[in-house]
Length: 503
Image (cartoon, rainbow, N blue to C red; front, side):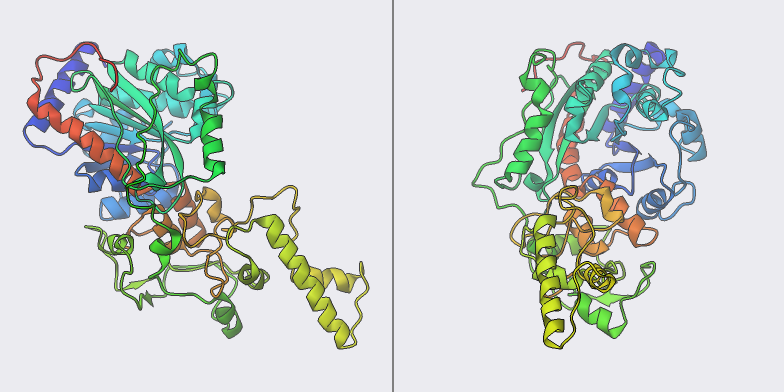
């Protein structure tokens, strides 16, 4: 887009907001819609999304576009041009279609692209054709050029600050600044913003200089003393900023500090305590819990009223109110491990779980001996019995594979790996003796009970683990909305040309 054309588009968008129009959002790499939900709740209009995974795209289309087939279609950003997107969705002219671009493009190969190539993306379409992941960032920035948004949000893991020896967030900021934006980034933890989960994320915000000359980030709404592991993760991510290149990282700012006077962080029990109990061992014994795909077709009434403000919020989220009964409160079939889950203590990880399992195995052998059944160590029978009680994973290789949650703390980070086994989030209630359900994962991520996940259990877990927590997105979006509303007091024909220091 030429500079003159871009400036005209910017002026038209500012005038539209001055006239009271809602900022229109395009969510790239949207997943099922965590960012979209947060922005929608903050007063933005979610106009479109681009998502490669079919089930996640279907979820986004169902929740934000009433299942419209065009919006529920999976799209590959490397094969979908901005012009193609607006044409397929009947959104008018490309440059006029959106006011805000949001998303978190995968960063695996971005470090190989580098500053010079990113600044001139149109000249480097074939630069890294042998690694298609690199193309994702190139296309993301091409979308910025094509749509000329007033604001941009980029979300990613903290490691983008030190990825393969490069600060990727800084490079993105430099590229956006060269294209007419003022830009800053920081690290925010979701637990400080009302999410019952300790999830650290890099958040980058950029505004056109025509509408802002400084950037701040939302103030925390809750307080928590983060465990050492999270402070360690932050320290590793900030390694470059504390080293020799600190002068180069001039777009990074410290996150707002949480005051101890704030309400305490939302805990796992705050989030899950009103959901129906699922006694895994009882269901297994009755035959109701069997091997096979978990479909969302069996209604389960709540049976309890919301027990905390958070639970009430999840049931009454405007536009996503709770159904009369849950259908996605389903769990994994793990018959070997239910007795072990019951025996584990809060905070136990795999080494402790393995120790408990070996104790259970020895106790079982002792019971057999009392009955006159001798089992020779190393025999086939010995190994067969052991396999029914003791997990086979190497303690040294998988120390963090399992974790039993604390009821009085937010959950640890939910990962996309939930779609494979869910051992990272074993329910705190030993009487239920199981891993968390899909709906419980959604609650821990701050998805309201009326939000629908398409597909079966495994894809739903993956969608949740990949998403940005909606309440974190809402906090950022609400903060950005304040800046965009200030355009009502600005004159579109007198754009600001310089960016002042960030407050």
